[in-house]
Image (cartoon, rainbow, N blue to C red; front, side, top):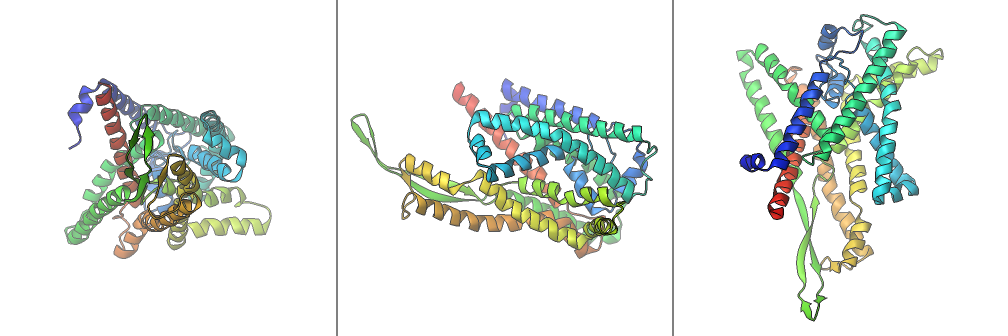
Length: 422
């Protein structure tokens, strides 16, 4: 059982959690402030049985279903982060900056600056997307002034959430961006439960039981995959301490099966939305070829099969990409060699890096396949049962479970640190 009493008796941790709770309350209040010119009733019904927009709603933290001022969520901020992480792999200057504290601070500042134009672009694209898909029925006013006001409101909402996320992260009880998305998902559970009870039919009892069992199995699988790791044995050579010769120390290097956690899915969601977002700008283009390509793109990504294949592929690729960013075998092998450590049976240096890369790739294959299946789980369940109302939100469950596990670990670390300080 998690030490609730220890949390309450530790002022620093208790105050941090209360602060995070207060920020989430503010976030949920902002989620009910509707953008000017929007018919909230029409947009709520528009989201029913729409897989792509349902995914976008999850990514926004549940704020898109009523088109609030924070409807974009933290998507522009995450997109900006992806851009700079890609630059870190391509441009040597950015790679060097990521190794230094001042360089990382500068990249974080540039990420915030880039978030603003990306938010403006995505806000305008989102408005065009809804006007195209819903034939303007969602908007009570389509004037230029109202459009500009809506774009400004959505951009300000994104910057506001970015600020809240950084404030939450500073309290060291979890990642602020992930916690905001988590709060949006949890906030939508009462409505989902209400709809499930309203639509319940005694003849669907077996389907409902299987649905609940699938959710439980998904949660158990996510926890197991998140905690699974391969322990690489490491032996440290004997060292001289003063006039004494210390004996060698045996340890291990933990390699997680799911190195990236929920980040690859968040990255994939951000990327899969780009085709439909940019296609909106060319739907009414004067050139027939450009107009046909834009229309084909929108129609293609509304197809459930195509959407599932592309989404699965992106999650799979981003799992490897993010793992290469956060775990570099060459650097780990170099650090082990500097510390006098070695893997039994493996020579230090390049052979150690090659061995770690080989092990990591094998682990990532299982982790990437698991994340990909979790990402497209709603579509798989829908095709298996033929019921669009009973969808296992694999992505939502993964985010919730991952955020809870990460927050629990950070809180436990803070409690342990306070005990040592005492």
